[in-house]
Image 1 (cartoon, rainbow, N blue to C red):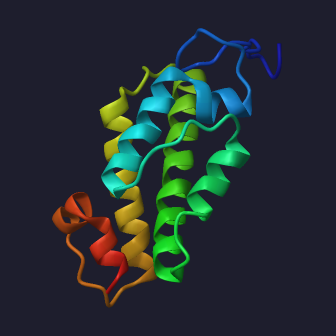
Image 2 (image 1 turned 90 degrees about the vertical axis):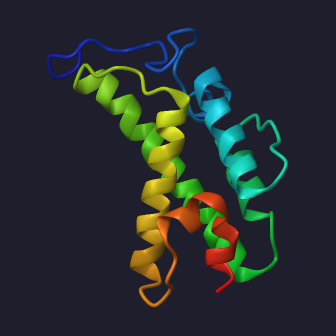
Length: 139
C-alpha cells in the first residue's frame, strides 16, 4: 500500500497483463487499437512495436520533412498524454475505461488545440484536422 492506495499490478485499461510502460503504451489490446486508428487517420501503415522506444522511433522516422515530422510527433505526444490520463482516471478517480474511439477523439482534439497554439496564423479548422491533418501541417 502506497499513500493509502493499494498497489496496482495489472494494467488498469485491460486488466489482462502486468502493467509496464511497454505494455501500457504498445501491447495493451485497447491501446494497440488506438495506435492503429491514429496511424490510419494520419495515412500511414501501422507497424506493431514491441516497446515505447520503437513506437517513438517509428513516428520520428516517418518523414524527412520537418513540418511533417513535427506534426506526427505532436500527435504521438497527444496520444501518450491521453492514454496516461485515461489510466490515471481509472486508478485515482475510479473512472471507467475509455473506449478506443473516445481516446482517439481525445487525441485528435488535443493535438489540434496544441497545433493551433504553436501555429496561431494557420487557419486549420477542426474539420480539416479530422479529415486530413497533413494538409494543415503543410501550410
